[in-house]
Image (tube, rainbow, N blue to C red):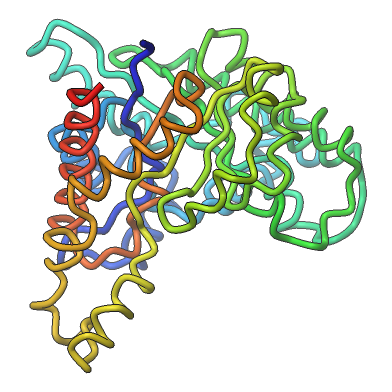
Length: 344
């Protein structure tokens, strides 16, 4: 059987004592900063040590501003909304180069890395809302592709295995005015360099309602579904559709909707767990355990078997209360996946 790969979505809690404002200030300088890079690297290696096989660089920036702040800058574009190749930098990937080099020297092999980029529709929405300028949508697609291409050309000490396009609005936002064909074309433009480089190209949808759009693209091969919190999402997907279009799934097998998980504890203990933080460990010790996670993967596998290529947490862990509890969730996923593989 094909191996199911453990990856993660990206965002991660900041270390205690570090504020989002401080991080935003450092990122806005757009330069290599030792303190900033240390925070990124420490979080990245925590994911590796927890057992994530294809970790995403820790996302500590706003998913739109990370790219739009560069795309909006006249000094960084060759025409409006079309970023210069040289300016299309993902600073987090520059940061992890040093720890990836140390890992390679110590282990004799390169780390596999997942790169998450915000999709063209999401960037367009942020700038233009519910309008319909197809040419600008395609320019965003070209810009996204340049960020990806630059990342692939620049990576020396790690291997970019997966490129994921994050498109939360597809299937959720009723303001999407573009035709299916326009969306398919823009997504294909955004993913063309990734496909040429032989990467797995994934789309991270927050609702699988329009997953067939991704199946119809030439360049996207993996569809991410947040199926741990909402198992019924898997019932929206037709295995035959995946097989006919040579598409695969990334299934969510650990819940990351921390506010809903905490609400259960608030009810149970009649308290506010964000203040009474001693109850937080119950989430990973009793709710999101390796056994629960393994069962979710078994259920998904019983429906889709070889069509599942990746599995991991539903979404990012940026809202979680601490790095320690986030790491424990990732470790639980690693253990749950190992148990599942033994049971086959």
